[in-house]
Image 1 (tube, rainbow, N blue to C red):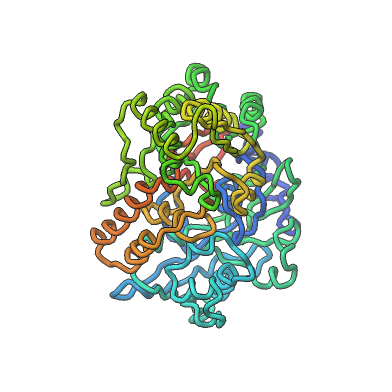
Image 2 (spheres, rainbow, N blue to C red; image 1 turned 135 degrees about the horizontal axis):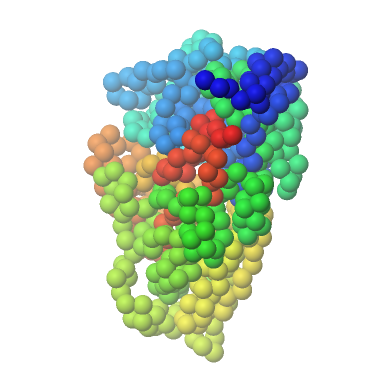
Length: 529
């Protein structure tokens, strides 16, 4: 066998390399240049909320359970676990062969600390509700229970963690892949406070560790030498770019400056299919693109107005003429295809669009609006070519039913901050499943921080509470279906389409696999020479 001299030299250098304080000095080390779609607001697992942040945080940290390259749940920091007979007590045995990037061991107490911190009301974590299946988690997060020791998360010893749930939760293991359940380095958080996430302070337990963060420019990470599987992690360094401008990102991808990018400009899809088919990856995704309606605003408290706004949107035109990348028109909030759950569709599904417009006009007239007295609405969206195209199309459709629409856009972090504080009338939002269960979508209409529109229906909440403690999967699905039916009949939000994954992936990137969760951890990838 003939070995190329360059390959032999590279392997020799790799073997002989000495890493001072873990800093890679490898010659020809593999570096992945990854566009993530937006600028992270934070890298604190207790405060992140978007997939563009998860692309980074999911490389830096690993929970009890993690995801493989196909998006399936597999053991992570827990090498194995046992579950009691009624499905309420989980006992996890932690790995002893992986540690924090500063060399200190990851312990069961680090999980207790992280989960207590996110549920502590003082942390004000918008995603804390994901962990409400845990015993006393909701009461602690709402300030009703002050004693954190009453939380159903205990360190039985250094490497044994026990979690007790308030009721059997069939999707709990999948939930543990989510960043809300990541361990936190207690020794670092307590030393640096909120500055613990800064490069130079942060330590992590995933395949990578943070080395640099220049806002609006890039984030850099390198392999964590204390990660249990580091010898099988092929990519040495990752640079993440906040590629909010998809057209500019496409240019950088074509120039070889990016090896992969989350999403691409939809108006270039035909050209991409013709000229870069192998690198243009489109696949099904578990997610819903929707418009929250701010129920606190008197304009939107009339169900006739909400129904008319939803009816006037021609979802088929948006998916087939505006996007043209395979999205499916959405007539339910929960996407189809989730186990034994039957998504509840809007009442006007199947109605010819012309008829829908006439009925929507009549509803608006009943509510007191007309051509001479239009409803003035502000529609917010975050900066993105597709979001803008959809907003422009929707504004034209709403004009037919006496709505004068003002379009406002902002970069993604600012946009979602405005939604969090209810500074909007109608806005663009999207939800990509954290775990494959209808509850993950319907929870957005419960009294949680991600319920941007403030929808609050007592019967809906009661049905969701029943579902949360119901063991039988069919009965549980039935409660959630009844809840979604109520929300769809009240036009609590406007579902527009179900997502597909849109990615640009260079042919030199190996190990990238399409999956419904659009989960692509760098540890599974490599770069061809």
